[in-house]
Image (cartoon, rainbow over all chains, first blue to last red; front, side, top):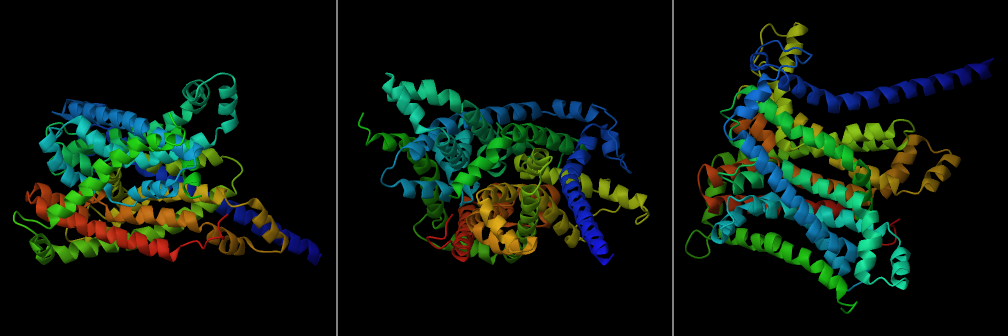
Length: 279
Length: 281
């Protein structure tokens, strides 16, 4: 009798624990999603609704706010600039970072640890601040207010990640595959392009997307280094005091959308990267 | 090509790139901070430190970091351990929890503005519950507490994900055998967390904290979107010196102060959480 009761009580606490666990998971998911949903309601409502009170809890699927956003002077150019800068950052950070990732995974060389430490340390600095002195340097070299100049700074931000992700990706491909290709008549280079590259391409894409997001989201350096050719973040920041609410929310939502897609695309690689970084 | 040289050739682009765009600007910013036109001077530092806003700015930034980072650490640890024992739906939950990782600080600020502004969702909910009769303007200088709360919530919402990712990756590296052994000896889940997870997670905690604390001192766009000038922080003042006051010497001095604080805290965290040699997994 008493035995059955204790077993019952045990099962009870386990069940309560289980409910508590599921409830907190759901709650934490809601904590992330609900604010984004509110932003979505505002974006898909007419400007009048956005500025009125009380707020509806369902979007009315009115595109007036988004149309206003698209027609706002300079907004589409800013959006285009954002995409150009992010694309340049993506290409440069992979082109510069991937060889280093390959070197780290395949060779033991003197200064390897030092190099790795340097890469990790760059992330321990408030890098956007370095845009201040670069502004002067860019004026001297004619790079001021260009997409390329800003992309250079964003590449500095993205490179540590590009190196670490590619390092972990290359480490995941057995050296034996390459060696087999060498014995079959490939040179080091053709073995790389014919064997390693096809295997690694999805991972490289993920790391490129990560670089894209870093650049897309960066505010401070973008605001410091561009004047005429503002990126979307810089443009929104500059107009924070003067722009109406519906413009802010539509802009905010446009900033969020790529994030949702990109994080979904790279979700598998997010963890691989940090696992290896801490070894 | 000699195979001994190959690795150096491969790391050359990164090294050159970082020298030009990381080390060199670092030298430049120090130079700019210590000169006003003629030789070495501390004038820039004098100017910013004696400005009445400066103590408030420092206090705000540190206070915000002190409020936000511990909550994020606790939340990230909780989420990471929850995900770790999850069997069904792990991928979906992880995706949802890491969404904020891709959201910029500006977008996060605007998202929370939608909740906290005068005709926003918080007011709508409070009105619906009958707490307030007409919408109150929450983000004003009369309500410094609410401004602080809004900024802190937006930061916690946005930047917990980066810690979560690092900690989940770190927990994945801990051998399962340790937990099994502890269970055999009757250790409770809480004991297992304290005695296995936390100590073995030290390298990841180190990385997560360093990254997070530095980002906390860099806070900028969230504050601009939610508080504007109501809540001055270091990075915002740097921006103001550069653009509103066109004083790049002072802006550089400010940047150097942020750098020094960041490096100081990095060293403290690295020292406090250092892993003894031989205790690594």
